[in-house]
Length: 351
Picture 1 (tube, rainbow, N blue to C red):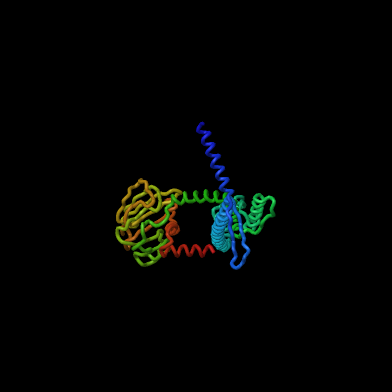
Picture 2: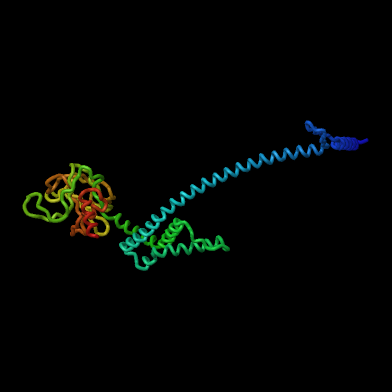
């Protein structure tokens, strides 16, 4: 007999024993107290195993149901919290919608004013979208997006106000992009011109200094009798205060006159402009030297015809015409008293 046959016989024998064991009946008798009638219940082992398995399965399903209920409750709590957060965010965005619209209107107005001031051609300014049409154009765009997203559904018009506000701002900026590019070129050209001009004060800091005389008619400071026309802008300060160039250029001339300007430096800039620094105590540059903005050219003194230590600063248009230096000086100064008055007067004149 082979090993396979032995295992097969063993398997058949175990199968027969299991069947016999399973078919054995177990009698359960129930005897009620005080009654003669008895109840008996006969079950085989297969039925007992089935009943035990059913009970175990029911218990497992009950516990699994409780577990799923807890998971569902947690998800509900999470969604409630998320809904509350999103709702608060929606309210915040809704409150910001008005501010966004105000920014949009102001941006359009400012761009129109800037483009007009910079001389942008009319056909380029005409591309500015009308602020009143932006909302309607935005609504149509959102309607088309809604139709593409839900072809079979009706168009929903109940978007949150911030959606319209942001879309409108995006549309306005999109349409204003060509004008912004034109303005950028104009501003860059303008800044290129200003970078070559003598702008600002010839000092690193104004602490310890004070403005004494402006451009125009004044009483003669030496004789105190009669009037004279003052061609510069005077600033008094301590002896030796460093003086710096107000723009790039070339040293046009270096003076040393005992009467009049005393030690002085004239710098030639582009566009026919010159800047002159007079009554210097010391000169640190030479004629023909290339000068950079903020380069030190000397120190403050009282050489020449001067009643005290100060800098006499002039702006020339060409070599013969003196012009008021104050607009050049105050172009970068918004803090000192003289320049605040100048800007205030300019603003009042504008309005």
